Length: 115
Image: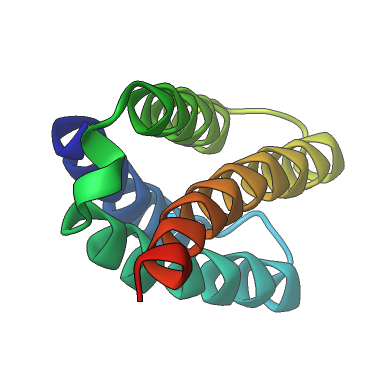
Protein backbone atom coordinates (compact mmCIF):
# COMPACT_ATOMS: atom_id res chain seq x y z
CA UNK A 1 0.00 0.00 0.00
CA UNK A 2 1.13 3.56 0.46
CA UNK A 3 3.24 2.32 3.40
CA UNK A 4 5.32 0.28 0.99
CA UNK A 5 5.76 3.31 -1.21
CA UNK A 6 6.79 5.46 1.75
CA UNK A 7 9.38 2.85 2.68
CA UNK A 8 10.56 2.59 -0.93
CA UNK A 9 10.83 6.37 -1.12
CA UNK A 10 12.95 6.37 2.04
CA UNK A 11 15.19 3.65 0.64
CA UNK A 12 15.66 5.67 -2.54
CA UNK A 13 16.71 8.68 -0.45
CA UNK A 14 19.15 6.52 1.55
CA UNK A 15 20.54 5.10 -1.69
CA UNK A 16 21.11 8.63 -2.98
CA UNK A 17 23.00 9.47 0.22
CA UNK A 18 25.20 6.38 -0.10
CA UNK A 19 25.92 7.28 -3.74
CA UNK A 20 26.96 10.81 -2.77
CA UNK A 21 29.44 9.38 -0.27
CA UNK A 22 30.79 6.87 -2.77
CA UNK A 23 34.24 7.83 -4.02
CA UNK A 24 35.36 4.66 -5.78
CA UNK A 25 32.81 4.78 -8.62
CA UNK A 26 33.27 6.86 -11.77
CA UNK A 27 31.60 10.23 -11.24
CA UNK A 28 29.75 10.22 -14.57
CA UNK A 29 28.12 6.86 -13.81
CA UNK A 30 27.14 8.00 -10.33
CA UNK A 31 25.53 11.09 -11.87
CA UNK A 32 23.48 8.97 -14.32
CA UNK A 33 22.34 6.68 -11.51
CA UNK A 34 21.50 9.64 -9.28
CA UNK A 35 19.46 11.39 -11.98
CA UNK A 36 17.53 8.22 -12.76
CA UNK A 37 16.74 7.65 -9.11
CA UNK A 38 15.73 11.28 -8.60
CA UNK A 39 13.43 10.96 -11.61
CA UNK A 40 11.59 8.07 -9.95
CA UNK A 41 10.98 9.85 -6.64
CA UNK A 42 8.20 12.19 -7.91
CA UNK A 43 6.37 9.26 -9.49
CA UNK A 44 6.54 7.30 -6.23
CA UNK A 45 5.32 10.35 -4.29
CA UNK A 46 2.42 10.88 -6.69
CA UNK A 47 1.53 7.17 -6.64
CA UNK A 48 1.14 7.29 -2.85
CA UNK A 49 -1.87 9.59 -3.30
CA UNK A 50 -3.72 7.32 -5.72
CA UNK A 51 -6.69 5.25 -4.60
CA UNK A 52 -5.93 2.35 -6.95
CA UNK A 53 -2.69 1.69 -5.07
CA UNK A 54 -4.85 0.24 -2.27
CA UNK A 55 -6.35 -2.45 -4.51
CA UNK A 56 -5.01 -6.02 -4.50
CA UNK A 57 -3.09 -5.43 -7.74
CA UNK A 58 -1.79 -2.10 -6.45
CA UNK A 59 -0.57 -3.76 -3.26
CA UNK A 60 1.27 -6.38 -5.28
CA UNK A 61 2.93 -3.70 -7.41
CA UNK A 62 3.93 -1.59 -4.40
CA UNK A 63 5.42 -4.66 -2.71
CA UNK A 64 7.42 -5.31 -5.88
CA UNK A 65 8.73 -1.73 -5.79
CA UNK A 66 9.69 -2.09 -2.14
CA UNK A 67 11.51 -5.36 -2.84
CA UNK A 68 13.47 -3.83 -5.71
CA UNK A 69 14.38 -0.65 -3.83
CA UNK A 70 15.50 -2.74 -0.87
CA UNK A 71 17.79 -4.79 -3.13
CA UNK A 72 19.08 -1.61 -4.77
CA UNK A 73 19.94 -0.12 -1.39
CA UNK A 74 21.64 -3.35 -0.30
CA UNK A 75 23.73 -3.51 -3.48
CA UNK A 76 24.69 0.15 -3.16
CA UNK A 77 25.70 -0.24 0.49
CA UNK A 78 27.83 -3.36 0.12
CA UNK A 79 31.53 -3.00 -0.64
CA UNK A 80 32.28 -4.62 -4.00
CA UNK A 81 34.75 -4.38 -6.83
CA UNK A 82 34.13 -1.10 -8.61
CA UNK A 83 32.99 -2.27 -12.07
CA UNK A 84 30.82 -5.12 -10.87
CA UNK A 85 29.08 -2.93 -8.29
CA UNK A 86 28.20 -0.20 -10.80
CA UNK A 87 26.80 -2.75 -13.25
CA UNK A 88 24.73 -4.39 -10.53
CA UNK A 89 23.46 -1.02 -9.27
CA UNK A 90 22.40 -0.09 -12.80
CA UNK A 91 20.65 -3.43 -13.20
CA UNK A 92 18.80 -3.05 -9.87
CA UNK A 93 17.89 0.55 -10.70
CA UNK A 94 16.36 -0.64 -13.96
CA UNK A 95 14.23 -3.13 -12.00
CA UNK A 96 13.05 -0.35 -9.68
CA UNK A 97 12.27 1.89 -12.65
CA UNK A 98 10.34 -0.86 -14.43
CA UNK A 99 8.26 -1.55 -11.32
CA UNK A 100 7.52 2.13 -10.76
CA UNK A 101 6.45 2.51 -14.39
CA UNK A 102 4.14 -0.52 -14.08
CA UNK A 103 2.47 1.03 -11.05
CA UNK A 104 2.15 4.40 -12.78
CA UNK A 105 0.58 2.79 -15.85
CA UNK A 106 -1.77 0.85 -13.58
CA UNK A 107 -3.23 3.88 -11.79
CA UNK A 108 -3.16 6.09 -14.88
CA UNK A 109 -5.20 3.53 -16.81
CA UNK A 110 -7.91 3.69 -14.14
CA UNK A 111 -7.86 7.48 -14.17
CA UNK A 112 -8.22 7.43 -17.94
CA UNK A 113 -11.18 5.05 -17.80
CA UNK A 114 -12.99 7.03 -15.10
CA UNK A 115 -12.60 10.45 -16.71
